[in-house]
Image (cartoon, rainbow, N blue to C red; front, side, top):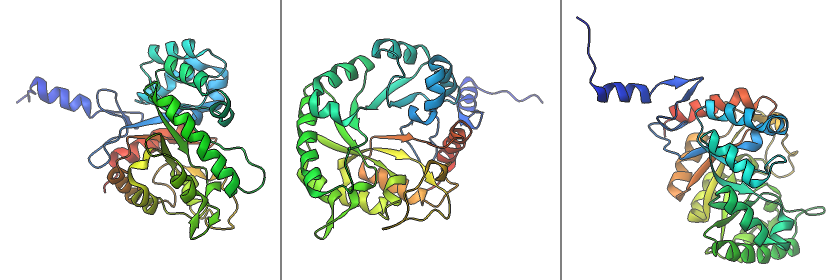
Length: 292
């Protein structure tokens, strides 16, 4: 006998369909029974493609089932035109990275650009420094971040800093990262944990999520090739060490569980490898299937 399905069943089945290894936009790409997201893509992952063809690359992102994105520039387009392209491809920009110097010298220009792009979170991903990151630089940065965070809050945006590993120089009984946390105002300064750049200098993402809880508002999800040296004195990892989620040495279930408990609000896959286009769907599928 031919089996019949109710409209509700048909809708549920369609929501579970997988396209090129990812969930369709009827559901949320990369989310599953354990990992609830929300998750998006840091567009820097496809930077070479964006430099050549913005509309075509946005189409690729959309075809992966991705809806939410984080920005790292607009690839020669004005913020207005870039926002128009995002809209036309069904992409929503949640957060974006801007240069440290602009936060220091002209945070209001960032606020206006971020407003045009529709951003809710505005962050700094790199602190220029000569030699090792030191206490004087850390204190200087904290003051600039506090000022930037307060200015952006007046526009309804949250400021964050993205970790990159050099912040973990020893300082008293902890690290300079602990000093940065202490010297920045929780009301105005949040953080984005790039788990790859936490593990590379020998730090523990799970411990840091527990230690600083709600200071962490966003994550960059990426995995590190098995066998890559980590810890104090280890060589800085390279983009060749970036592998699809679940294929490397990071304890992803434990990290994802800790991030959820800390109250992380947004997660972004970032894949800096030369094969990011092939690995991003694998990472999305991993997040969909992972159990914790």
